[in-house]
Length: 432
Image (tube, rainbow, N blue to C red; front, top):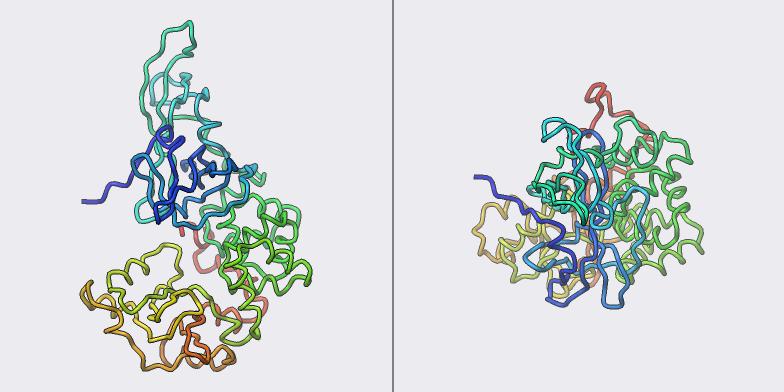
């Protein structure tokens, strides 16, 4: 029997406390941010507007929400404290959806009957952190203080008109909604072929995480153009959301004063990772690696490792193995002990300590290992990711096969039209 995914009415979220994983209160929910979509798809919930202790209102992406429970919201603990600013493509659910007069569509009561939206239910998609609007709680009739209250009922999101975009609109909002069905690579390809003005408009309308994913797939010239047109605080937010190695590559293309200004606006921990990557030569293991592999301490279990591997925002290459190190477990770590591959995790009981099944036979890469040797290493040992360790034995990061391919393919490889692989409909339309 399939697991029931949680459904929450937004009125029950208004004012509830938001806690970090340690139980400390971050603030309170003041609204939810939604994006309308095309193609008969329900509005997507992008995140929460949270009022922190200082009364500043910040944006908390749903990807940072780990639990929506009775009377509270739990976060990953990573919160950006910059003030929330609503973008043109965003809608506030409590502020703009509730008390709105809309019409029922055909097949849901009297055709075209006016109703008032009293509440909105959101539901988490199975096996993902994405949330969508699921149902509306509405009242029939015009209501009002001098009128009798009409019948109330709960209807599917598709029963109410006015909460979707036209399929063929050409504005930035419609393009963003259309692009949401594509993979980041395909969005990047579409952006690349837009006019510079429209490209910047659409990029500015994407949410931070989505824009970060797309920027990682764009040619360097497009990356520099887009990041240069964003407000500096927004640009810093997007750089924080990018993989550190991709952020380092992008910042390396900027003038020195622009680079330093953006690094100063980034969170200190994120900026430190990027600065460290920028200190290595580009075509070496240090210049290619990401500083965010899965790192576990020796007393972690197979169950702990599998829980980390299941994280939806991990690339397949990074999820293929975990690295076991002594404390601290943030890169650069304590002494690197070895690697445990995903297949081995599947073969051992959940209570098994990862330190007892670690593979320590393979010599890890050094940060100054040149690209040709990195490529040979991955090919010789059939690896999709390899550890990078410094002279003291600390794990610095991991080089993944996709980053190696980026540097082996011709400079214009992103110009390749992949639609021929899947016919006229193109690639990536089936989801992420």
